[in-house]
Image 1 (cartoon, one colour):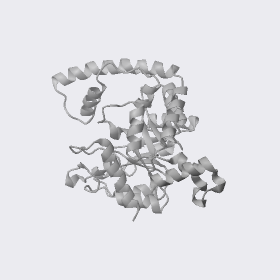
Image 2 (spheres, one colour):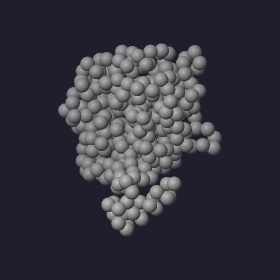
Image 3 (cartoon, helix red, strand yellow):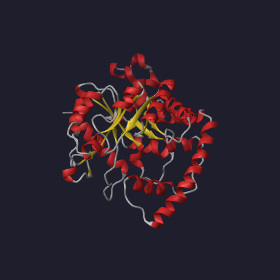
Image 4 (cartoon, helix red, strand yellow):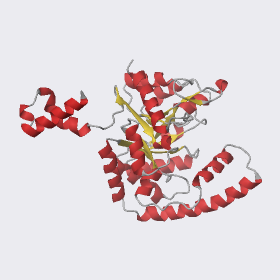
Length: 343
């Protein structure tokens, strides 16, 4: 049927124009414009994904990420910073950043580093600090037209960028870098930027003021440190501050009032990460959707029925099964959303 419709559209447009075609073809320009493009808006709910979901794929270029998003059937995205920034010409690191993140996360989680790891971490920290200055210098001089080119790539693929997450909003980043990140987000079409909640009232106040000045919003992400009142102070500080709520991590933290939190903060939730995690009693596992304890169906149907405006962001964090890949698993998550919202 799709091939037949495509043939009829081409024939009709080529022979007599829209005046002589059947009534259903009067929308042909719109049909052609959206042909072969993803659509993950389901019954009024915008389902997106964060490109962190594709971290296991070997090619992390912007073009490859756009193809992953498109192949997964996703039409809206929270875009991690690096693929876009590398596309715009940001210098690549000459050290193993992934290893640095692993050791840093281990230390922040309260785990003891071995003597060898401590020495490795010290060396990597020095390299990361030096690289941070290189990046800051690049950001101060970058031609933002490259972000306009990136925007065209997203648009051509039928993908909306609703959030942008560059590593530019930390306490060690200058106001100029923060403003750069917000400008880049705006060019890409994003309504907000996201970052891990800094647990620092002075930093959320600073970011909120810069967001207000840039007419941008900031969504603070949380893990198991999230509580019902976790974002209250940041929200008080600025109209631009809001939630990048993670309902899966919230459940893994042992909370039972996720739906109450969504109802309370729905006007300040800029976006919500969705994943299926278990409660502490069940092991806190990150599982294929439908196997954990997270009230995903309840949250999605509440978004539909109460017409909440924020998007739900698929974040693939469970282990990819053997024989599958991240794109296929995001497709499964999207299908879970589609089934939940169709009932």
